[in-house]
Image (tube, rainbow, N blue to C red; front, side, top):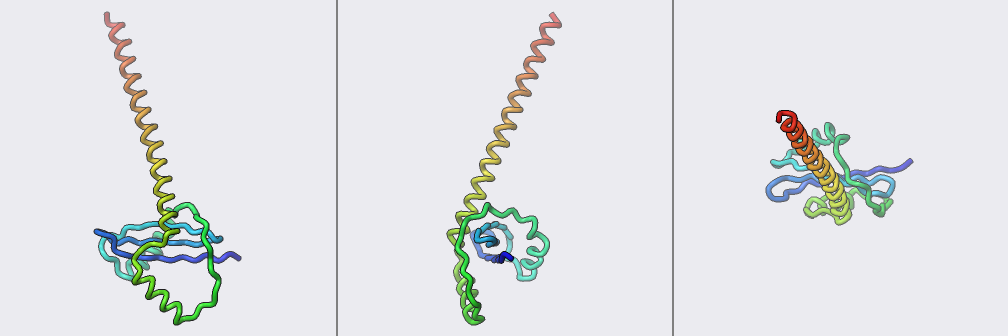
Length: 138
């Protein structure tokens, strides 16, 4: 059975509060960025996770190393405190987010290119139709 772990980091990035969902599954890291707006309360974050987790669009998976260790409660507490103070995003997470952003950008470009081409074609057809009507009405 494969182990899946997740982590949510919430931090303030001028002017909004941002949440970074990190999911490690089968040794691969995928990330999703969510903008909360105003500072979210703990219960609001919990409610958001419960209602919207399965709708989140995670980035493509990036290979990462997973450490399998016993968990000392005091050490876990120290790590949590350290993570709360460290407001930055991990480099692997940044890579995954950048990859997702680039994919969305290419999708947008292809969609807009297709729309532009369809509009040109429509204009051309309209022009041709007007020319035909003018010839008929001589």
